[in-house]
Image (tube, rainbow, N blue to C red; front, top):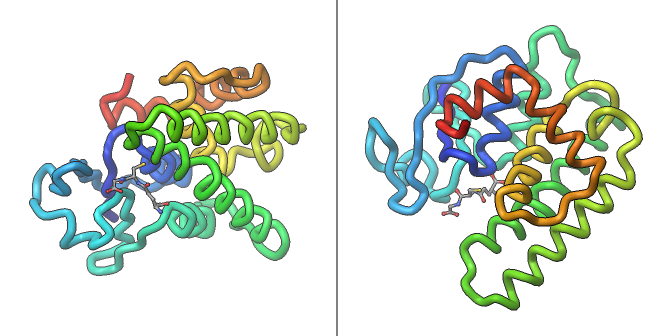
Length: 194
Ligand SMILES: N[C@@H](CCC(=O)N[C@@H](CS)C(=O)NCC(=O)O)C(=O)O
């Protein structure tokens, strides 16, 4: 199994989730500006979309899109059933929300230069963290167990902390909790982030 990532990007979510699921992916670092891979060259040959992540489940079977990758990991976690029925719909609902309403606007704000546009996108993201914090009644986003959705939420909160965005108290405690996980520490270390 191969995993294409760029340090600290949304690809960190899949990296954490793979380790949580007990996989030992071969990691390939991608430069998303030049679209090249550390050891093997042209990233567009792997993913014509140009962005990370890609999970190559087996040779010639690439999967793109964080939502699909995290759902695949959830369904293939050793010793865990994988969400089904309404629980899976809730998981996909949460992943879609985090991906399209939090991660993507947040990511755009890093690439834009206009102050007004950046401020607008970031205030939208900030509001969404407040919303999520208000709805979190259990230890993790979807209950007492760490799920693939937590990996994605954590990555976006990590970005928020990096740019000193105000973060609700509940989320600060949550970040500390997630960061104490061995898999998270390992993923950060493997991406050269600690
Ligand atoms: N829809 C994609 C978006 C992933 C994405 O935004 N990746 C960013 C890093 S956070 C990236 O690689 N950007 C470079 C580019 O868009 O060329 C997904 O959910 O996986």
